[in-house]
Length: 451
Image 1 (spheres, helix red, strand yellow):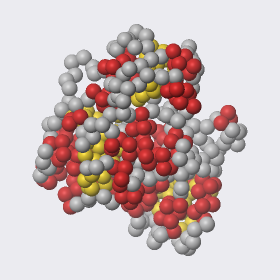
Image 2 (cartoon, helix red, strand yellow):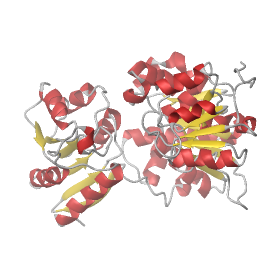
Image 3 (cartoon, helix red, strand yellow):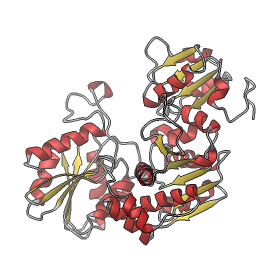
Image 4 (tube, helix red, strand yellow):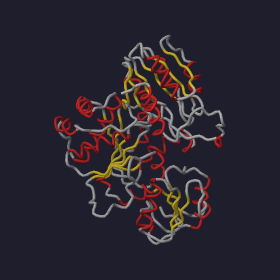
């Protein structure tokens, strides 16, 4: 395929030398794109995601190519206009993949589980003495110029979001997909396009095989989008042993570990022995805000699972405490996804459960109404609370007689609000991001006497 400027696809960073490059968005990946572009040309137009600053979005129309940040939707009208003018609009990761050694690169994607899977691979391969780069959506973008004196890794393990996949025109030799459920409807426009964009990575030029989690119904339902060569990865006893050695809990983490081991076996040509992997697992540090214990008071355990920004991981978190009384704190920015599976999971609980739905500026009231319409058993109660501070205290009071768990697992992302958002002055409590929400939760636990 050839574009109006005569370039052949897939475009690579090396194709941009001497061109007028637009950098649209200056977040973590946007800055990496800028740094890479500066190695290729002095003719750069930089526009932040909101179109403010010294250059406007309209100034991108003077460029030969625009490298946009993942958070800027490919379906914005400005993108369509740029492409209609013959200007290629691409992503920095996709440009990097076009030049990367495909047989030494793995892209790990999925609605949930991809960050943990990447971190497991990084830890195990590091312990085995194998040089590996972990980055992409998690950590450092691979297109960021390497530091002077830093050698090239043996393998690249790239966490890839649906946004990045939608912008890519070349793929790695191996793609791994951990899960699939509705998410990011605002960016993609609708659920089915999210699924299509997410899995488009599997059929890009250069991809030879897809690994898919066998226990995920969403992936089976969309199997035709996974490519011609698909291997279904199953949980097994070896994955369970390594998961335990890593200090992780839950069936979903056994699935993540199984995927990590399958990726390693494909890269290295053969699986390592279980004893060797268990030994390598020692010292693993789980990612923060993923089923992270943050304190205990009077036998009540507080768990920070704030990065559960979707129905799927919150259900998985509830399964971890299937036999323990649980006060679940939910609510966040509403992205228009279907919360019925969470309501069904709560209706199926067999132990005492209190659902604390965070009100303004979160979607807690809508969640409350949806869950309450289910035929809930008597031991499952759902209430609306005005703030995370109140939810933490109420959860503690309710759990104390049971010695239960207070679980912050929002099933929705955290996004800051202001009066200009239409939230108004009656907003009870808002946080800039999940880190701020997590930090506040820890503060409230400490105020209760948490250790």
